[in-house]
Length: 614
Image 1 (cartoon, rainbow, N blue to C red):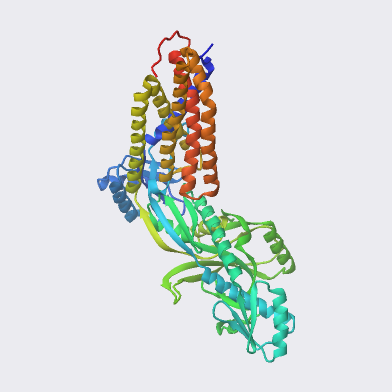
Image 2: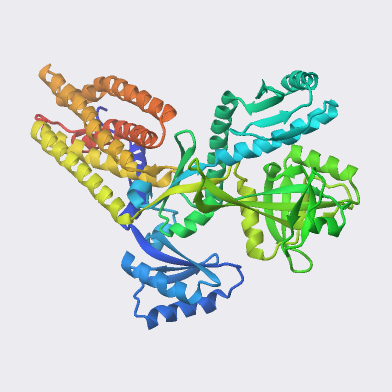
């Protein structure tokens, strides 16, 4: 029978619309300004501090919506940002020594929606507000480090080859200068060094060799360092539970980070800017304390300091770095002291196993290295970073180690957790420093959302006027399908993980809503054309949908292909626009072909109709 759906189709379509509506509803509730309290040592009594905060807010006449505790975090919700800031200052003044008091925005979704895991759309930086950092990778210090490595490598190469030289030292522009007594030694060194160092440019200058890092290698190094730092920063942000963030390259030496919803800029800077790694080195025990106090040590060793300030001599040669650490975790040992359990990759495991097997009975030190911005700049405009080094552990190699071992001697559980998190997230290839920071308040994002909603409403009203004027009742059916389309889009965006709505995404939604009405126009025009050709109304409806289907699919497929290409090759806002357009195209085809047909069948199906309102 023409124009009639079986019951199961109506049930299925109804379920899709109802489920979409349920998952779209949380977006009506918005977010509440919140203050979250977390223990620095994770050893506090939740109930005790819970009642302390409650009493503190009451004493200062600060009104709150609710206070709750979950997973060791106490969350207080407020009606507006002014009250939130006042509460934050009041609580932080009282308990900031033992607790982290952070500002946040928490979805105001009711419990009955939380039961089905319904949550609002994840908003991007431009809609939600947050913190934006422009970060510069310190290529300058990395090249200086490579310069010092080149000095050690070249010195060892010349010694192995028995080529005498008078002096080897750092030169300008990250180069190394080597002086010789005669031209024969210089020429031998030139031929040999050129054969083994392909990334170095080696030239003669009087009775010296000038060794520089060639430009293609520097450019390749910059690209690799930025890409690796971006990957590590993304991993670090994920470890910290900051969602909907974006980390992207900006120019040749910069990284742009957006952290939506983060209001506490000092806390965010501490999380992002931390630059730490480990080096495992052999302890030189052949030097007596008198020589150490006078700083008389061999050229292959250097003095470092323990956490208590005691000097210790380490070999310059690094056995293993934090780059080979794949996982780290904090535990408490049998003496109630914190320790960090380390897991290495296969290469790191082979290195440490081979080294410990050949050095049984010797001492191995764990050197913790951290870079901090001094706030000063050098003559070339580069930020001056302070390198802090501290030997956190010295252990006797009693047996051969594998890819699993532990580090002890850490001062407290907080330091152990921080070290574990940084190692787990990865050590930055080059130190970074924040050169620009910007806080965007949620009020700006709210303004963008309001403008986006106004655009949607204006577009819908224009479509309503046009469709009702030209297609009467069928126009109203098309508008109903358009509204259902919007609900389904919002529901899908809310359900799918990893999708963040930005201003460009709103533009994509508005565009697909405006374009989706074209499918209904095609259907309506084909129905009118069939009626003019003398078909009965039921046949005209059936043929109209059937004949318009190929045109609808063709037009949407071409747009879909363009959007997929944009998503594949675009970045940032372009990808946001593309993904929303892709979702909008798929849902508009679904509503135009199936939903409108279902409504038409309910109204006109299995009836003797002599006149059609179209």
